[in-house]
Image 1 (cartoon, rainbow, N blue to C red):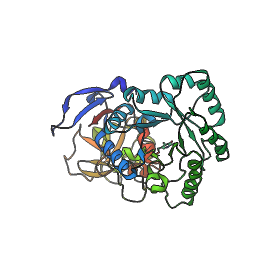
Image 2 (image 1 turned 90 degrees about the horizontal axis):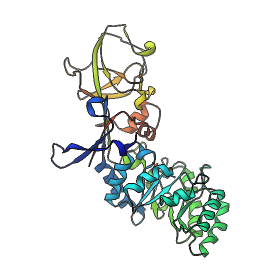
Image 3 (image 1 turned 120 degrees about the horizontal axis):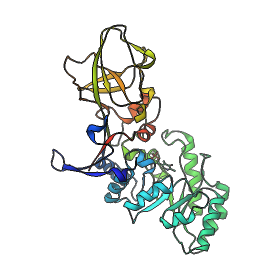
Image 4 (image 1 turned 180 degrees about the vertical axis):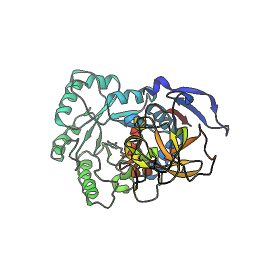
Length: 394
Ligand SMILES: *Cc1c(COP(=O)(O)O)cnc(C)c1O
């Protein structure tokens, strides 16, 4: 979905409390099956709390993948208003969206410089995160042939073996600092397993990056993602790069979540039906009613990012959802556009057609849904579908 095309100010921009403004996007509420709400004030609160945790280091914001499914434009606008000055995205296309709403921000594209793209980076005033000598050669050639003096980041690989210059290349590259206009505005690296703070690899990466920082003295340095921030000051460098924690994900798996939840997902109940004992529900007859059952059919399916792993069979309960204030389980397979929830235990008449089931929100976190479906909350967020009616509250 192109958020910029679909965002419109809500006519009732002031909510019941009289203070919180909202904007909406995606299909209209009644024209779709589910409502995704994004609490921008929770996101800015999370950013501020991380910023104060790392001070005097600076706190950037990672808004790649449409701000982890939360809407790059509204999220970047809210964060820029809150004082965030540095944004990271994956690609130039994503960077343009941030540039358009935050003209004075510094914007880095993590996936580097695709061949032939240097002038486009300069035109958009976006800084490539350079991860190989060939990329750097191309960027240098462009800078030599043009008047462009905008910066770039050098990404050093300290253990991921994914993107990044190798550490052996650092000393030679550091001699560039002797020239004026060297154009290196940031040196960075990326943690392999910061969500497991006791893993010795973290300390090895911190040490390796310490050498990079020494070589590139005077250049801003950046190492920590969300979980890396909680390793402590030795991981902070000059600039931290949280993504997941901004959106309410738990940067400390297995411990209480210090962040504020920012996402709510409610699916409309299209129909309530009685299933006799022995009746099966959904494709593949994957779930059989052990006794007379009542099923709520919710208009959210795998095409909306509510993955098939959320389904349930006998002996393997599906994901939980909240209906009429009570936790219920998905039963049967998730369809493309629909899910089926066992509401047998709810009081008679507690649920009516048109009511909503809460799939994310309240005490159901993105980390819970991820655990029930065998993935990580990052994937839950970035899977959030394009068909939802979206509401961003301020
Ligand atoms: C995605 C990404 C981040 C943000 O990571 P989170 O775990 O979401 O905080 C930071 N740095 C790099 C290089 C990334 O790719």
